[in-house]
Image (cartoon, rainbow, N blue to C red; front, side, top):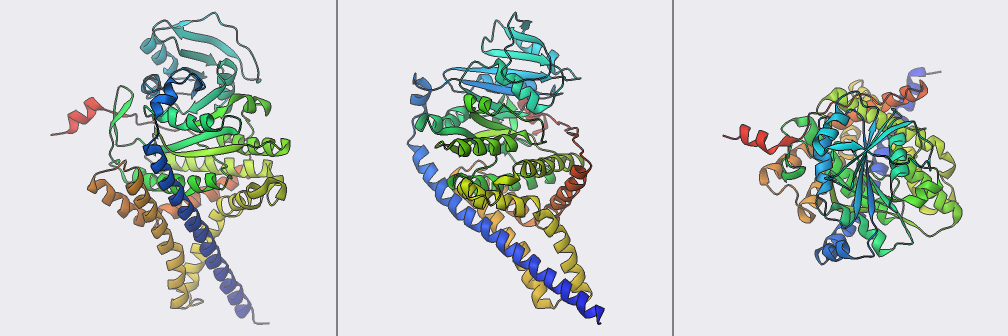
Length: 480
């Protein structure tokens, strides 16, 4: 038996499998991009004529409870709350949930907004960790701050749901800033189809490098550091070329925890946020889909591409690794919890298209990518592959990816133009090429490690170091 020939055939077959995988994955990306292009153009045309003032002033517009879970967020929490206070919306309340912070998060809030303890009954619709105090402000009557034992983000959000008064709630990360009309834009789907809309999410953009004044982004620029710029490209591709397409297919599984609006009664029907995964936003949306399908209700989960939420992203590899590890652990946990939906025709395109895609390409894909790159490279070095196959692999794995990233940047440029300067646009195009030579492979490695942590049942959130928003005064200080 010629073991060398057998091993060679196995490696050759695996390499063809990897090539087919990349072709299939990038073709799906291309189809999603084309669908997203059509939807974004349609959205921009429709939005151009939208009168958001009418929505804001209408008595039919539903009031919203804005929930801000915060654990050790002293750096940004005051700016975040100030930005929320200035949103253009008729009736809303802001509920900040201090989830057992060990820094000065609560003190910063008390000092900045002159908070006083309220004599308010805490009604429990969803079981949570112990709530100690509820604070209010005479100067800001729509602001409530809840102090509770640490229970994690999902538990903090459930506390916010218990405290909230309104039929819609919006989850906002404590390191985020939303634009003036963002809430109006993301609530619009509930106004258009109030009986059907269950949840809606908006696009999340990166605030690193931007200038903030009084809780508002007053100058949009790319970050100075390279790592956040890679994430700008990644976010644009994920949101504009991914979630827009899945939303159009009625198969949107993810609404970012940084900015999403939900109909409270449906979330209460399924028992609120679950603490069983490390990505409570993904699991909640999947569970909402499953619940509505089971009941046979007509419903929709929508992505709106331009209610902008600005959020801070990691600036070091160490913090980025923690973040992506947690995200992928959450994907493993959610897919396992809802594995009965995969290839289940009773869930329609959700079960037959979206869930298999996330299982094969999002959950297991990093393993194929990581080992595929390694095996193909070694096969070429040791002579198992000819030059033609190796170049074909690079074209499919790298050039196809570059095309899709560049296409996402150009879609952003022709639609929303948040980065109007030629220097920023050129940087984005350059980084959309460079990300294919190290950054994407590094992310795959982080995700592969996440499986090991899932098997060890590791549930650590990981410390997310914050640099804080660049204030206007800081910007003026560095300018000549």
